[in-house]
Length: 136
Image (tube, rainbow, N blue to C red; front, top):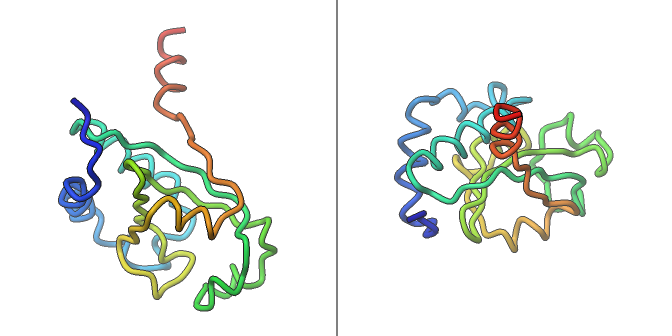
């Protein structure tokens, strides 16, 4: 049976993050959101958690990001792109400090709140793609 309750997932996220303490640093997290989000999703799935990789594109409003890093402030909203992990209706972001150094680590929020910040929120079925490639 797959675990859907995010609260029971957070200790597993902490376990995962103990392997990667460097992700607390914004400079280390930059450009690594897809890799570490994929790794977290695989880690959780191996422990029977129904985890999914989400691809986020285009922020809705720059004013929602008052503490964003300078390179993101300079970027157009449509150029923002990020990856996170969804478990049920909760989203876990282990590299959010690359966008905003003041974010908690990990940054955990509801899917509903995430969708208020980003115009495009879509599931990236990376594991299914990998399995299909291996079988083919």
